[in-house]
Length: 355
Image 1: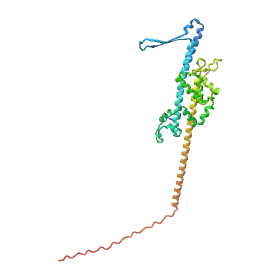
Image 2 (image 1 turned 180 degrees about the vertical axis):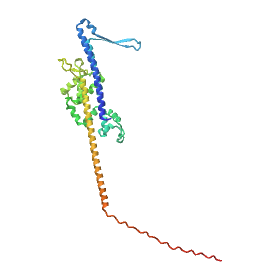
Image 3 (image 1 turned 135 degrees about the vertical axis):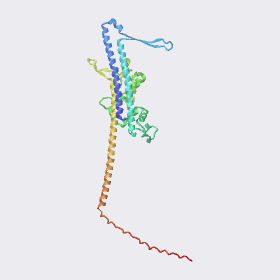
């Protein structure tokens, strides 16, 4: 598989996730708008306000008796319902972010596999495992992909390998037009994904989580991290009783104007994944193009040497032929055939018979 196809696959998966976000966002907003309108109508009819509550009874069937049993009951005001919709929407955003990061990891593994598949020198020997060099020529891309997935400390080890091979990548991580530390952003998303999958999107302690992320990136600075980095991490959490909850919902920018402008927190995070993947793709593709050009240039030199050698041989052959033509023609000496004379035949003498 070529690096272009690997990037195309990643883009397609991320585009689907973006559409899923819209599929979650639009119905939630419509439902919230409907509830707000209903609440406003209830203000003119305070006697009916009690009827606006939603009531929910949770049940299950008993395994022994087969009878229906209740295990929970909830009454929700309109405000409670709006909050519940927002919390549910946020939970769906969290799982979509976890999916997006896993797609990013798949991209990294495939891109790293491509590096080894195209040039064996791109991988350290330990990544090949117990195999001889002659055997590598028979291995296909899927073999390299499996080795990439089993590489120790993935994806950190793969990212470090990319940084070592592409110095420009490390520079752009901290100095870019996005005005964000991309290395920090990627590590943050990885840790958010872990909390979403294993903790339901709720950290035990936000300060400890922040310290863990900054330490992983090397930005904790002996307990005195840059306030900008602290703010960058903490903006992805709620406030008050939700301070330990990961919060990825849209944030309204200007509440003082009637226009609905929002900051897309989820879209910004997935955008960081796209930006980083694009950097890796561009560096690998550029290196591949350089290698192809270098190979073509080297082959051109070989061809030029061969052509020069052939021309010299042709010139030498032509010179030899011309020299041979200039030589005077040799007279042909006709040798006379010597005819041997036959010896005279001996006369036979008849022997006389004795009487």
